[in-house]
Image (cartoon, rainbow, N blue to C red):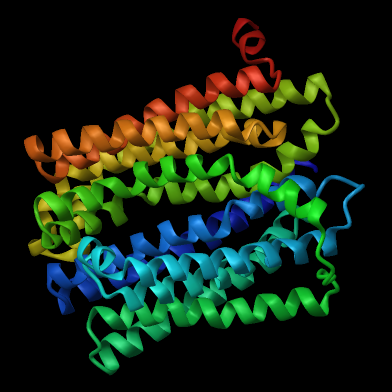
Length: 418
């Protein structure tokens, strides 16, 4: 793909990524003034639980679909349909687990188990949406990708505001907005793929085995990622209280803007990278390393400067009752920056399909985050949680880079020497 097309796609992904992340950001000054920190904390816990459940239900199958898209020997419509037939029983098992352990789960998360069941069902819809978006992404159709994401963002925002402000549903109104918009666009995404002939409903054990071989080693990877991204909120809720978790989450929304923008860039970078790697051209590899090193410099600098001004932004957006979380923003921004850099090097591990090693790194980093969060939250409060998050992201990035250099040859050292 030509470089100008890459930049054009990246700009669209950035706009749509920012638009998608704009939901919590736009709702932030509204919800923090309408709801108490305790109620906002419940929104945070539901959103966090939804992310955890989605990672379990989806089994990282969409990653396999992305990698296999460039394999000309794959029957892609059958592969996509098989992926859906793999995820559905996974969701049913997850719902069964939630029902059996409903009481302890409700006490730990702080919300009714019914909301956890809704989250499991919405995870299936989210997986379908991910497939539809992935097909546009790998085929370099960034415009349709952007229209779909922005439309879903607008629907999510409208439903949430209607139930929170119009019907005074409290924090549950935000939950309805998340779940209902996901269901509606899951249906649209499914019909879009079906009409376009992207699904051929004939189950393949060989394809299912390939997906699970790719995805199952990534379960520890997903668990590690969740430990890195979610431990801070759960630790604050357990050790300090759900009200402080709500305050911290408001700071988190501000601090992760750098990560959102960088992640949007990666959505354009990854398909381009996979297509270049398939050619095995040494001169193109040097160009890739050049762009990557530039991002390694730019992302932390951007994160640092944004983290320095973000406390002022936090006070302006959410108000004084959430201002106590401002001290955590700089560490969150730096952690999000290193998290974005992680994706740049993890792409090589995904391409080489050496996901087992990646799982070990993320799981180790996640455990480090848990230990540090428990120690630092007791010592420094919510700032300690942010410090633990930053430390785990830095560890994960450097270890993943080392693995990437071992599983796929790139001229990292040659470029530095030149």
